[in-house]
Amino acid sequence: MSQAKKFKFQRTDSTTAEHCCVPLCQASSKYNKVLSFHTFPSDAENRLKWNFAIRRENFTVTPHTRVCSRHFKKEDLREPESKSGRRLLKKGAVPMLFEWNNFSVPLS
Image (cartoon, one colour):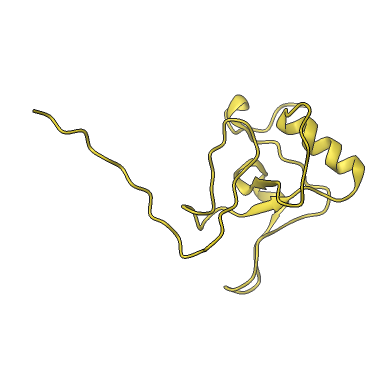
């Protein structure tokens, strides 16, 4: 008899979990402390760019909708100045790295 190995994720201490809204991405803050999760921009022009980039049709963005940091270029992220600080996005950053483009920047 062979037993299938079970793989368990290590849970974080957080009581709430954020999830990435990008198709094919299963990132969750519940099991990952390395990723950061970012809300959609408030200005309409950038919000449209994000919607187009993540390829979600008829998608309603709520205050809880998040995109994880793995979809942004490294230079679009501002690292925290202290250990307790948060990782932020630079103004105008748009998600570009996805599973369907092998997490590489598309040529212009």
